[in-house]
Length: 426
Ligand SMILES: Cc1cc2nc3c(=O)[nH]c(=O)nc-3n(C[C@H](O)[C@H](O)[C@H](O)COP(=O)(O)OP(=O)(O)OC[C@H]3O[C@@H](n4cnc5c(N)ncnc54)[C@H](O)[C@@H]3O)c2cc1C
Image (cartoon, rainbow, N blue to C red; front, side, top):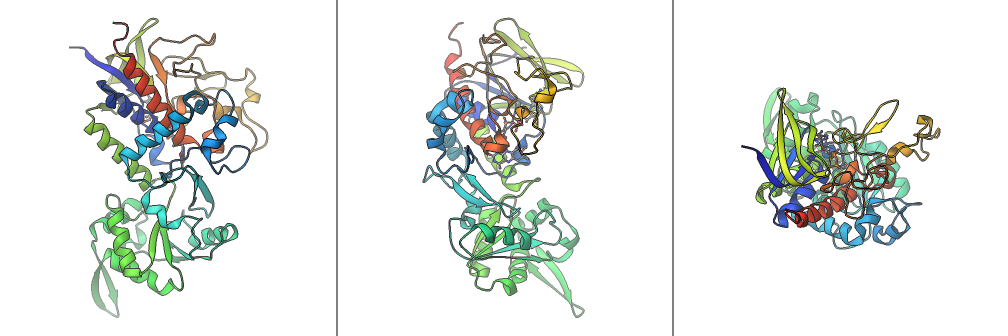
């Protein structure tokens, strides 16, 4: 029997998940097809809407009208961005929704990141809070050099930041795997230690607090790399706060990013609750249809399986997620071969200056104001194919700090319109 759904979403990153949730909440029967892990696992877990546009942005909503016409935010507008953030807020317990202004969150490199939403576990660390901070790194977690991060941070903030590197606990001293350490804190595993030939054991959270106490000084808050539990970071933080008598926060990290993984889990739970059918682990490689798409084709163990639908949304990510591909000759969208505008001369794809304006950073498909993907003549590639997230062109997520905001807002809007269009032309 043919597999058939109202809305078929291709791509399981934050854009695809937002699209699927949005369409399902509008009443559609939704199928989410995804190949590999999304960039969420590499990203910090922060939800950036717009951090930079001709300098630091204080209020992203005020800056939208100044963005270029082709920017996805100009398509979905302020309402789309707010709807995207509302969807996020319905799925997570992130903080930041009390204001439109960007929060300033310290990063593991000791820089400050303007962002719209952040995990509650990072809330006590904001740079706008003037309480003195201690940053704690671990010898085995080499990506976070706490003394260096604190030194850099101190240069930019109105409080004193100190950093210290401690050995982790018991046997974990040689175990650098962040997830292993996080699990020990989640479970509050007992940690063995031997001193003067005598072995004792302490619960992991107490053992960690004991390591930090001698360094606390006047610090009123203590920041750790974001590894304070995979599943129960709130509980771990509450225990550490009770032991230390100071607020505790997580500093967002690079891959593997536990906040990114927690965010992904929260979305997966919400998709399940909404009855979205998820098929993952295999790529969409082809399609069926003419002016209207009829099916996308998934390759599984050498077999080609069509997934039929009424409406389709492409959310396969940008150059990083492989939603956009590039060779020496051309830039392309690999599933439907949708038009991807790019300068003819490859030497114009990047700027000779490392921090210059690289046009490759904006590569992606173009859409109309209903997010339908357009061909080279500005006509819809298919009447029922829309796009969301990193596969869209016209913005540079890394320079602007706008990645998740674009994915959420275009996902919500694409999902809603796709759902509204189901069976409009039966
Ligand atoms: C290192 C890094 C750090 C970042 N940090 C931040 C940050 O701190 N804050 C922020 O807001 N943004 C950040 N971003 C940007 C943000 O992660 C992305 O803009 C956003 O996640 C893009 O989401 P997406 O769903 O469009 O694409 P992706 O996350 O790339 O997901 C695309 C999905 O589509 C799937 N897919 C691709 N091709 C196929 C196919 N043929 N068939 C089936 N499935 C397919 C992929 O397997 C993947 O699951 C960061 C990005 C990177 C790379």
